[in-house]
Amino acid sequence: MSIFQDANRKQIANRRRVDWLLHILFVIATSVGVLALCALIIDVLVDGVARLQPQLFTEFPSRKADGSGMKSALVGTVYMLLIMLPLSFVLGVGAAIYLEEYAGKNRLTRLIQLNISTLAGVPSIVYGILGLTIFVRLMSLDRSLIAGAFTMTLLVLPIIIVSAQEAIRAVPKSRRDASFALGATKWQTVSRSVIPSSLAGILTGVILAMSRAIGETAPLVMIGALTYVAFLPNSLMDSFTVMPIQIYNWISKPQLEFKELAASGILVLLALLLIMNFSAIMLRNKYQKNV
Image (cartoon, rainbow, N blue to C red; front, top):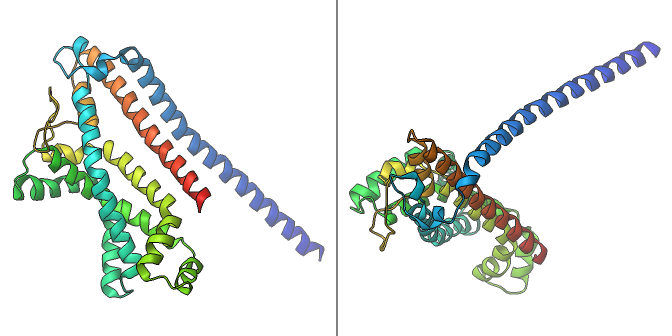
């Protein structure tokens, strides 16, 4: 018995040693990423804080750094979000409701689900090529705000559909059964029981998808979003620019002043992303308490 006990103790000691080594390895790996991120943020803060002045939000881009701002890019980003949000919410959540609540579990449904999951991981440049082909050339929308919004809607739709499906799937079956037992129809059960119960997850997915969209540059470059726009779009067919493209334009210039402007633009974009992520957390907590 003592031989088996000794072997057992050695195995336990070896496992604990391996666990400790793996724990240290994971802590080091995480620390490297966190430290690199902190270094980048500190570097951007040092370069960009001095340029965080009112003219950054009130002036249009200029060839002179002293009088240059990102008003057109900031307004273009907001306009694009205002167009994308209702489109992506209605289409994405509607598709998720249909697939989870109404579509039969057959081969066609599984094929559609597989394609949606695959599209959620497709590189964003592919959506830019698709938007260029369909919206810019085929539909003759040119390099307009509406073409950019449609292209970015295509980008975020698979993400919203997948996240909304997960939220709807998480609703307990007992809620549906209780609703049916009370005499509710299928749509009444979905609209008054399933959707309110899953709204926290749906809204979180939508806001996080919007956060990804405002940080993307490749699809908008493909459809021809301009790097220098010294006016605000007055209609959906006007040319536009967004914050990531304006930041790229500044950082590609050799003058040090434009590097500082790019750093300040990055800070504004980071602040907007943090606000949207914080809003997602607040909405999730609010609706989870009400469920």
